[in-house]
Length: 199
Image (tube, rainbow, N blue to C red; front, side, top):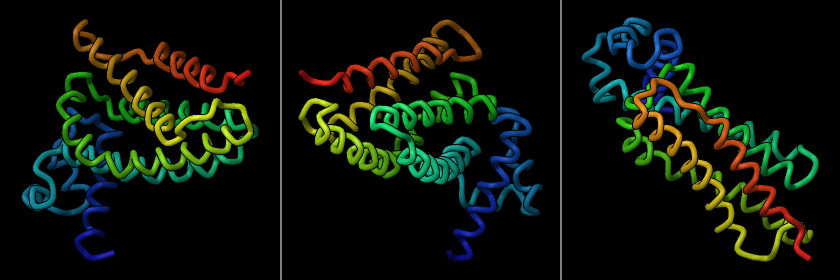
């Protein structure tokens, strides 16, 4: 790791501490800079605003979480249980990050373009992981034959789309919080449909 990468990691870790303590909207770049003994101008060299810093920090932490989650997932008994455990856990992790950092639906919408810009490689890794499980499920005959990569991609896309749907619905209602329980039930139903043993 280069000196620059080490400093960026230190900034991300400090930022997450501040976001957890104060919430994203109340945290300032000054708060983050003070925590690591820098001035605010130094942070602008690496990040143009706190929203970009949050997205990068959250994705870096998320990558570590997902790697650990994938190791836990393969230990679950049964391929359907593995898929459901993975989708359920990643969904709840995402919601927890938003809740801990006290992110409003409108702030989330503001950050989404940067999130999607950085998310693609991360998503590809998730798709490859689910593809392996689905391929095995097809070989065992518990999922109908098809394109496991495409199904994996659809599972991730639908899961993410359901989250974003609930967020947009909250914005339209003028709510300051988001209710995700219905989306999680829909994802579980989708997994059960995919794993309905073909006759």
